Length: 289
Image 1 (tube, one colour):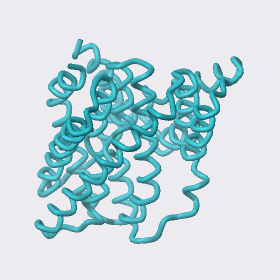
Image 2 (cartoon, one colour):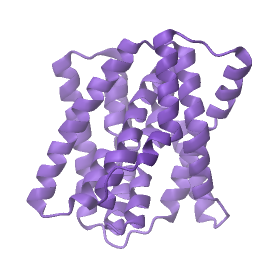
Image 3 (cartoon, rainbow, N blue to C red):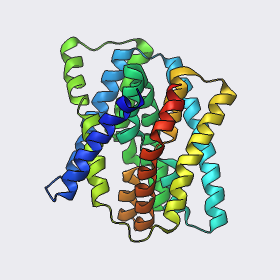
Image 4 (cartoon, rainbow, N blue to C red):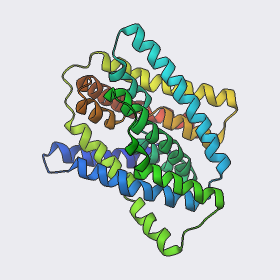
C-alpha cells in the first residue's frame, strides 16, 4: 500500500531527473508558468467543485495551517537567531515546503479526491502567503499589489464562492477545467525532477542542518497540533503529509533572483528532498494509519 503511493511520485520525478541529466531541452520557466497560472487554478476549481468540500472543512484546514505556519515560524526564527543566519535566506525556505509538486500527488494517491481537495486547500493558503509574505521577506520589499491579480488567488475566490453557494459548473465547463487541471500533478513532478537535476550545490554547510529541521519540525508540529486539537482520520493524514514536505524549489528561484544565499537554499532543497524520499514510507505509515 505504501509503495503504491510512493511509486508514481518516484517514477514521475525520476523521469524529470533523468530527462534533465540527459541534456535534452525542458523549459522550466514556461512549464512552471503554465502550471501555476492556468492548470493549477483549473485544478482548484474542478476539484473543489467535484468533491463538494464544505466551508467548515475549509475553515478547519485554514485553522490547522495557521497553527502549523506560526509554530514553524517561531521555531525557525529562534534557530536562525541562535545560529546567526540571515532570515531572508533561511526563513522562507523553512516556511514554504513543497506542498504542490510532492504534497498534492501524495495526498491524492493516499486519500483519493477528497484528500486532494484538502491538500489543495492547504496548498492554496501556502501559495498565497509565499507570493506575499515570503516574497516580501526574501526581496526585502513590501507586499506587491500584483498578488491580488494572481490566477491562483482568483481561483481560490471562485472556489470559495462555489463552496459557499453550492454552485456546480455546467458539464462541458467542468470537463474542460478538469482536463486542464489533470496536467498539474504529472507536470509538477516531472518539473521537480528536472529542477533537481539542474541544481548545483557547492557547499552543504548549514543548508543540510536546516533541511533536517524543516522535515523534523514540520512533522513534530503537525503531529502535536493534531493531537491537541483532536484532529483524526484523513484530515490528520493530509496535515502530516503537507507539513512534512521538503523545501520547495521555488524558494531557490527566489533566492537566486534576489541573491539571498542561493547555494545555501539549493542545499536545503537537495538535502530535504533526498531525505524525504528516505523518510516517506514512515511518514505515509503514520499518516495513513
